[in-house]
Length: 328
Image 1 (cartoon, helix red, strand yellow):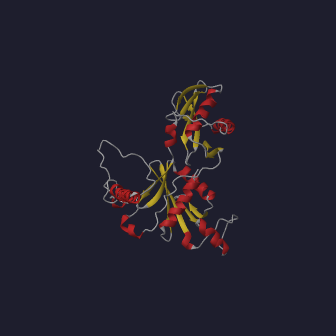
Image 2: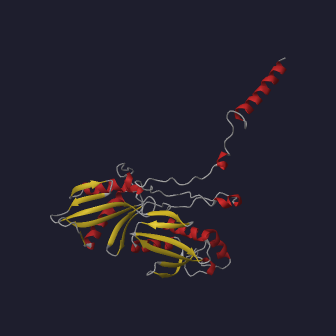
Image 3: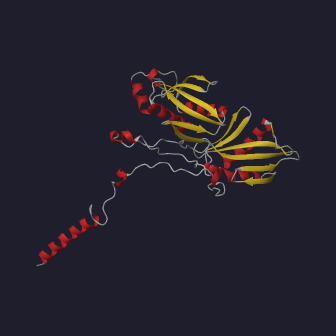
């Protein structure tokens, strides 16, 4: 009798599982429901509203060829990989700034503390705009600007000497360089021992100078820089990424480069890949691996694009991603 009762309980349990979680049960399996989802039209915003500024990190691929895709493509790397924390004084013409590999919300309290402990009086400090004004003398004041850098989780600090009467910036590169060198020393001593962050300055972390968007199915790097700084930054990135520059046309904003993908560098190196650099990683392939990197300035911003001479969009995307990783 016990065996019959146990068998009855087992059958009842199995049927209950089917009733609860089976295809026709109360709680059917839903893990494949996403295959039936459809992409709706974009939301039509009222004319009084503007579209939010956001980066599309995971753009939707062409669904017409979805059945032929066997693997889900990995998302593009849209930011530079962070390295060891460093503080540098950089210069481009008369423009000078401090480059720091840390978030602006961390750089802000260090910057403010530098002036709070100096012999000068702080006139105002706005963590939202990242501006600090210092009373320097009877005729001029100093204005420090803390901004997000090109590289992810980086800071750029600028210092200007401003006339109190007309508000014009005075050209005094020797003085500015001298003051920035003092700030660099202060940061170098403080950055590794300072673990705090300013909640009031969190907004500065979102004001990035490098962003990525898609244009006609191709990736474009948007830099919130004028042409001179964009050209200098891309040139530095090409060197850092071991991408060989065969020629350059600064007037038209074009780099003519050669690039081998990471997995190809070792392969072609084994078979005598041609190189014109002392760095063994700089492998120059044939004409099929030639690219043009273009920089165009529009409305105060610079846009960086990669074009493959053989029309290979995938190689162009990988090259542009490599450049973006090395921007700083």
